[in-house]
Image (tube, rainbow, N blue to C red; front, top):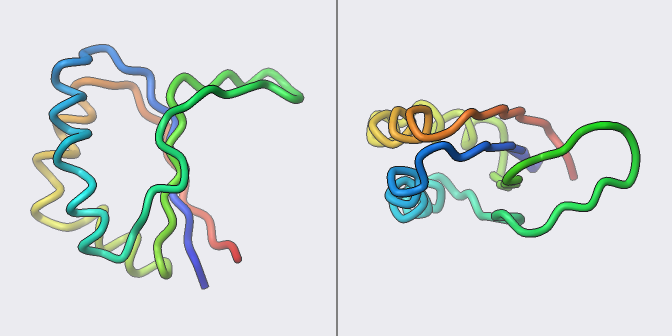
Length: 95
């Protein structure tokens, strides 16, 4: 079953975050992941949530998503992302 990782980022250090953005896609692809949404305009339809920069990734399953997130090669990039952004992320199984 497909698993989606939905991330909302508020970027505080654009230069560092740009280095992360350049390096992350190869690792995501290595684990069978693909971008479905990578930024873009968000329009509030209901409620009070105001995402800053929304990213949606699809992986072939939960194990693939976790393998990406826990990949030793991703850890320096994760630290770079955490240093340059405030991040909320969830993982959810879908269709």
